[in-house]
Image (cartoon, rainbow, N blue to C red; front, side, top):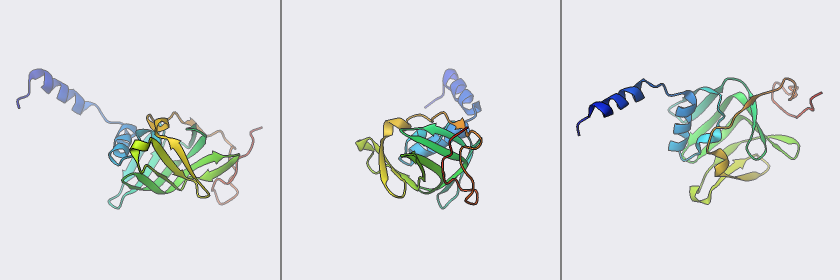
Length: 160
């Protein structure tokens, strides 16, 4: 196979374009059988150690909505394996006026079109189509969460 001047120019341009942390993280997720839009659009960087421990750094903590509201802390950690994120830290989801930590996310059968969120007391199935693109995540409004449990978010407070 020989490279034509046009294909050589195209290849050169592609190599010069920087991959953003968001796009490379989303490519990593897809290579592991997970949808690209699990993490928001404000990913600053991420690390994946040889043991599969994923650490995602966001520009700031933020809130978005899949089917219900979810809150991302500025650092989210999980064990990444094919089809799942286990031992999640830094992600909570609103369920019936309660904020519950998301413990894991998995896609066991992509053909089902469903993704499973483990929120400890229950498992919630959502449509994979909700996670096609990274969601826009809005910075946390000051004072939304109480921090009277050693810094862990334990409850929602109404804004005044």
